[in-house]
Image 1 (cartoon, rainbow, N blue to C red):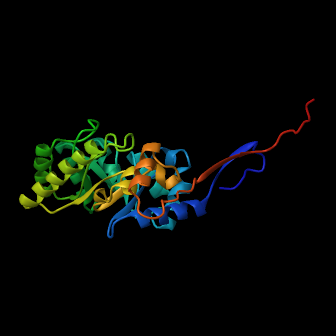
Image 2: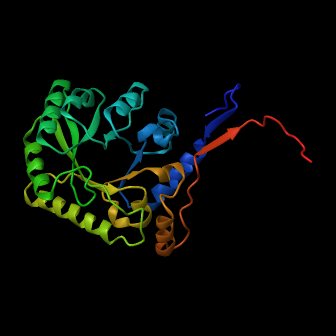
Image 3: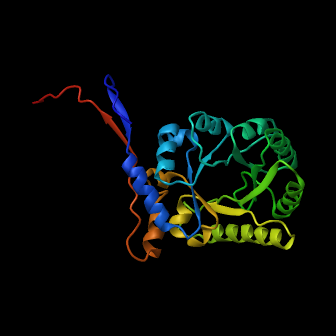
Length: 270
């Protein structure tokens, strides 16, 4: 992002830092794991379209947004990368999800059926991801409900059971990750239950910024990296855990944003 000629202060986005961070994150991932980059909330204030284009150019596999409005902005700007809506999607949003070719979290049959109808009308199957509630208590369904919902979605034309997901409650806030690992165990149990029930194994994903850097067993099919992609460690606890567990050189993250200002006046003061 270039300096505005009349601005007193401005922000600059470093494309080289984005490229370096994507390369660093790639090196931390298991073979075959897709790299999703979170660009919700105007790319954490860095500029949605500027950063999304740079992340895709640097090799991001997916872009992750919070709502269908952000997906619309990306598609209208000509960005063709897969888009995953991680926040709540409602039945009323279904036509827009289909229009902008996004995949979405589903936590109830009503939304799944609305997405299926929108997918049929649009002529393509919308990817849906069932979110399993494993301890964050923010969004999702129980393990038993996840299996029932998966069965129902597998019967619907117009949607594709693409993913099975959860979100860690405290992996960034502590050096004791027993709670997060229990959440992972619950998610894996649901994935195994899908297999035993004869359902297609969906893309399993749980990892946020901290998980790819410290817990390889969380990588699975996809990671959803947020603040680390912008060059910041999620927390001092994450850095301490990585330092303790790392064999070899620590990942080097480069801050993407610089905030600069013109010098208005220089004075000597007695």
